[in-house]
Image 1 (tube, rainbow, N blue to C red):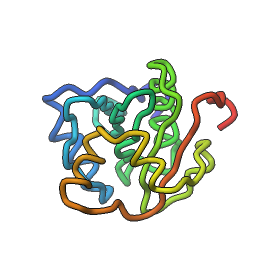
Image 2 (cartoon, rainbow, N blue to C red; image 1 turned 90 degrees about the vertical axis):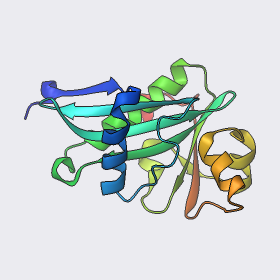
Image 3 (cartoon, rainbow, N blue to C red; image 1 turned 60 degrees about the vertical axis):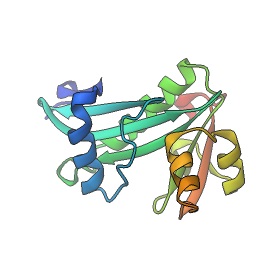
Image 4 (cartoon, one colour; image 1 turned 90 degrees about the horizontal axis):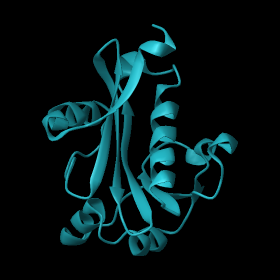
Length: 156
């Protein structure tokens, strides 16, 4: 399909099942999807959902919460498009940085660098994902990443 047939739209509360299904197929957690203080998007191709991404908003920073493209749509640059749309949204809302937890993948090509877990936990302490980890007395697994938003998106 052509690039023009791909759209990213804001998810509504009625889209929760779609977001959760896409995240589950990618092996991502769905707890607190579309919770208060978050913004999620669905990527559609030909009118069908093929990807989803979310941001949990803190004070001056956001936590990227899931970025997934269905296996049938992978390898076409759609994941990059989803991530960069979230980066631009965070920049437009005035965030200074975006953070994320990742159990796999190298996020450097998106302009992220690895940071200590303590940085993420202290910079976005009231996001749903951080509150859930604290409530369960758990630590997120994997690697913690940060992208400062003073870097132009065209450099990523």
